[in-house]
Image 1 (tube, rainbow, N blue to C red):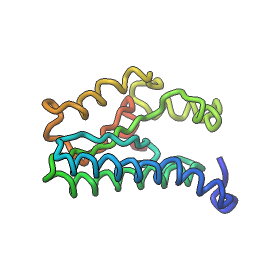
Image 2 (image 1 turned 60 degrees about the vertical axis):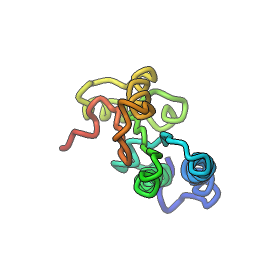
Image 3 (image 1 turned 45 degrees about the vertical axis):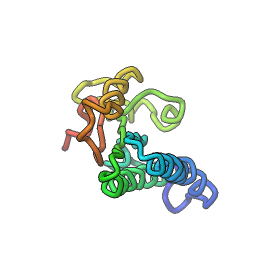
Image 4 (image 1 turned 90 degrees about the vertical axis):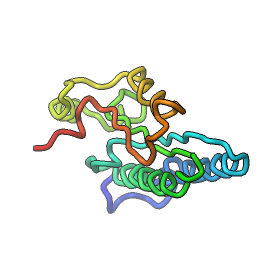
Length: 158
């Protein structure tokens, strides 16, 4: 993690390009296709718990994911009358190479203490939420939401 005043422009731009610009472009491509074809569809963007609650010293990542959440809500509103649903899947803490770099032992203990489930998530636990959001039946009236899968982390407060 880089302190805010020390974030180099190239690091900032790389993270924005990866997390926000790529989602923006994908939504443009798929949205245009679905609209031109008159097809009902579900677009699921990948957010992050740090886009809802800023986590220490991952400023650009948190800001980019917050922007994905906002982009998703705006697209949901714009495309609802075209039967295109747009939602964000928001994983909490799931072990991955990317977050291992910022999770020292003390941070892991803080997260686990703040997670009612008292553990990290497993990738398989994202499947149910994804299937619900993608379903043309079960998810047909769900649009513009952040589907949080985090073992209760987002529900906690001090």
